[in-house]
Image 1 (cartoon, rainbow, N blue to C red):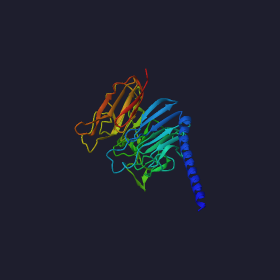
Image 2 (cartoon, rainbow, N blue to C red):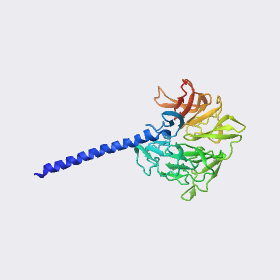
Image 3 (cartoon, helix red, strand yellow):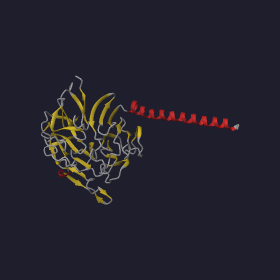
Image 4 (cartoon, rainbow, N blue to C red):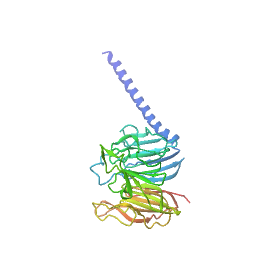
Length: 384
């Protein structure tokens, strides 16, 4: 009987110790986030996930000022309910000033690159990068980093070969993209495909090609390193862009299932044009066409020149089903899904679409950067 008070004291002390350790761990987690937030993110390109599967964006910071915004395709394919709707696409990655990458959020396919499949509520360093990263781009459930040496490493989901390692196995660690014909200078990730602009102005794409977002007809496939269980995979083809005639590609922007390129005329670099290829069900190629069959969206394997741009283009941002162009005069034009509305009688949400670029009205000043979502866009104003 006399031992009961001692047992009670022991249990009370153990309980208090657990509570104290728990608080310390919480503070440690907060400190980890604060460390990256206050000390390391001084010049960063941040790919932001959101609370919903259809709205994600990418923001670059220089100090506390936003200097660059580009779109990401962390979107759930609304028609693919049998495959991916059981997993969240909500994850975030940031490129910090020393060339390291941190990620947090959903980790169902290893898209945080931290050697685990554990969802994180605070930033974790991406493990296994071969060199300092200079750019990051996140797709639906994978992420890729452009390294300072011109190589590319990707991690996360790989069902369509979007990691570019010649396999179709997901990876929680960065995998080196094999088969690049030259050093890369820019990268962009779509929902399940990835493209790179090479130092010789050519483009290579890999991953899902069901909507011709790799531009197969205008690309020469190189399949010697792309195998799945000893057999070549249609989706995992690494394709090489051959020629855009009289234009030099200067920027790439991958949408959900389409890809766009900003190019300048070789004879007059100030004269620019935009070309898009892939899925065109909502007019996201900007060639004036939209879907005619609800169940079978049209696709284009050949790059389509975007019509009716009002002036030369400064940059591009592609969302899941749209693309926006920031013009050199500070105006913005968008095509594809440009909004949504709720039907008063039916009660369902429908997309507002256009197959030709439409001028964004109501800007309070000239825009200096843009980012596209699924049915929305955002811009940073010059403030004058």
